[in-house]
Image 1 (cartoon, each protein chain N blue to C red):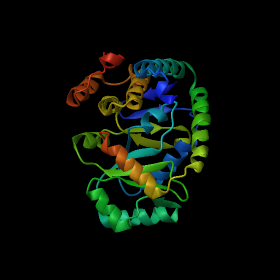
Image 2: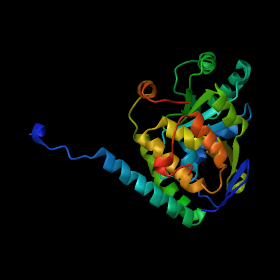
Image 3: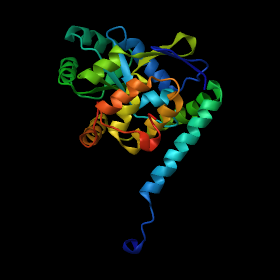
Image 4: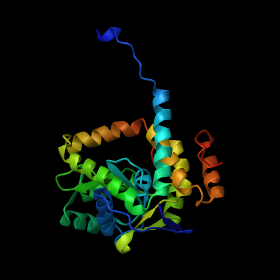
Length: 200
Length: 76
């Protein structure tokens, strides 16, 4: 794997774009017209090569007004998406404000889908404030949460799949990330990666 | 008959084996050019996406399933 890693950018040249990558890139191309976003959780290790699929892409978004959401909603519908939740535009916006996730997919499909949530705590604020721009071929790009937070968060979630994701991200990025920041999040989330060789 | 079958699945051994594979696979990804690992991954993921067209739950049933799952999982 050849990646160029700086404080706020990761470049992956020559990555073959999968159908899942295309789905994500198409969606965020619409989303970013309306708000800042950051992709978190399962899609992050997949973007960097982890050999697994996922049903949903978790995206945190900055809070915005309902009229902006209505414009975004109308654009999605026009572009062939729908929301799995039965609520109308107003109801979906209320769900976001209650810190609930809302799910969008392409018409006549359920998988893959995007789960959108408003940022709601310090960790989310860090994710979006320190987001990393991932540059792909053909000037395509997307924003992900910092790897230094993703690894501890995966350990915190703690399922077999999450721990495997953490081990994978560590294996790929261990000589590139800021270990001080990683260890600060390990401490904050009260997780210990030493059993898996993480953070040493 | 089923009652007499011995349960031989060792969850811990399975977990260790999976983690071994993740590390093995990570080493491979690090060694090969981007085009190689990503081509293999894209083939795998594209087949999963293709197969997801056979997904038989309705949006309502799917949301219910996710809701039940999130109650037992700590999530962002």
